[in-house]
Image 1: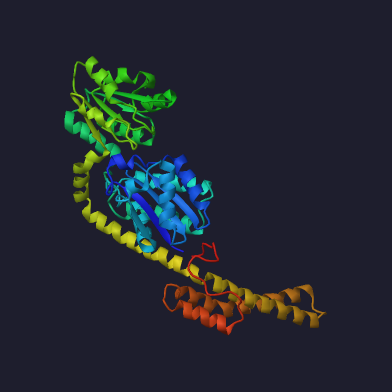
Image 2: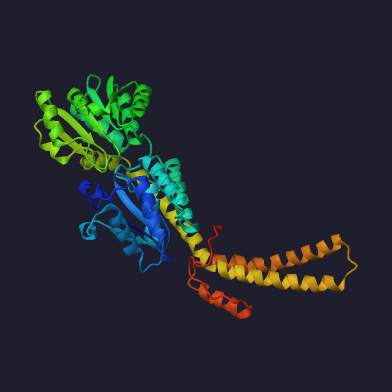
Length: 434
């Protein structure tokens, strides 16, 4: 039973495709519930960010790709043929390597950005809450978190860390130079918006407005960073006032449309305005770019900054990839060891049953033994069986990744009266033994 990942990311699809299959955390939970409700998919987790939507599954290799694709399309309303050319699908080694690269921020648009680890943890949490994870996905995701920590601890890839939020503020600074005298409107008050406001504050902006559907959240964010909350319902008025707009909401439809901006530009007497949309799905209708003196940038317009970031961090990325390779190898060793767990369990159960039977017979012939003496006899027998069983247990686990392991298991099953059959990876156990 393999591990697999099916997905679309910024490398394979433009934002107009990615936004159509983007999912909220609630949407991710619905997908994993649907997937694991099938008999051929055992475990699942879905990751959806501004740059990727990925479905990780563990189950029957013959149907995993189709199951993941059908479920994703069913929940997003996108026809399969519309994204066929954009999807990638990896199994086993390639899938594990891909996730660990994602966790280490090596597959991010902004190399070394820290937010992906938080997003992975959120995705895992909602999948776990839905009962969609088990021993394999649990171990896989937890190891991806460790990979992310190792990369950030053992390399300098995260130093002066960039993010989509910081790149968006850098873009505004490149256009205007000093941001101190510019009025900035931040639409949204989630995690990404908070990062934006943090970077704006670092640039010395003195007039930052925050508009959010929940006014109290906008007020809290504005006050914390020296900005001010403004009513979301009066968005058009605030657009008229601002020089720079950075939008990052969780809305499923554009919150700033062409018609809105045409009215705003009339009020502004066509004074230029720069809009930076870092949301997926997009917050600003693409046609806004056709409005005179309205300059719109979306998340796919950050490539120059991304390329510069990649060049500066190339050496650290090489070190990070070595960490990923090490972690993939260790995880595969653990995964391979699962194949012998049923045989080990049956062997030890058989030895334990023989021990119990013989101890019972012996004690029946020695009725005058005290309770303490009887316990010592049982403990001695238990110790002897453990010592005899230890070498084959260790050797079987060590050989788990070897092609010869099936022959070893068959030999044990031939030599000892075990009832089960030789198992393939992942069958018969949900143990997380190391």
